Length: 414
Image (cartoon, rainbow, N blue to C red):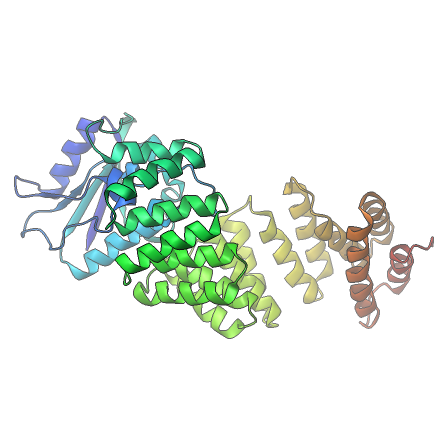
């Protein structure tokens, strides 16, 4: 198996370099134009090319148009899914695949490429100097659809509906319609479009994956888990399906199954901070605190801007009784958190008291409770009361500071 990607340079230079690398002659086969990938099921030839030739993918960055919100982004626009499909194809066909892409275009549409996320770690990059952006082919019918990702969701929906009406047998277009309707929170029409896709392509893993996203938005985690499990059965290397399956199973109190799914997801996307973070949470809830700490440390390493990685690391350390370490990570999370999450701020204050810095912890808790609405403050008081009582039962904890903070959360001055 060999997959290379020429990045940078002018389009002519990229194309020439790709053909040289492939040893490409007249018999080389072009993959489906990348701009069409989000709107069709088959993206590579059904058969391997003739010996000595390669499959060429031109302007790979066009395969991953961005524009939708992250929670609803159509899976057919996501690079880790589409490129994993390419790698799975290579596992079935002894062939060489050579792609080329604009550096700026790839950075905008698939930033995970530079982090070598998932399938990207198996792709060899060859970089040329400079970079020439590439315009969409005005004569390609997919250009109108591709451009729709730059429009408002309503305009995008109109474009996808029009295309689906002209090509009613295309399951990818049904998924595109459903994706935008989920983006607009129109769940019943989205489900109708997904049922069309099920009828058209019952054995395509992208269909249950998008259906699982629908059930997540409807807050039906059991049905979501069923759909993600089906997607993963159809494509065992589908890391996003496995990751979502694990998260849903964890929320439905099936932790052992969740861990299996999340660990399988990591085998195909070892740098996914979402999967690592969910795994850290399930490990923690199972009492596997060393594993939780290790997973959370990987989260903050691969995604330093993801503040809940810091909070989850701090939480696991706190449960281990490593209060000073927990305090440092809670403080790091708060310093990076633009929202200054009040629940995590309260936990930071408690960790200060547990670490022996009672005055600062009590001051922070008092200030926090004074600023919060009554309902939010009551919730924080309830959690703090439970935690502080548990701390009083532990030998060696600073009892005086804990008792003083208990007075604060009960509305008494100490």
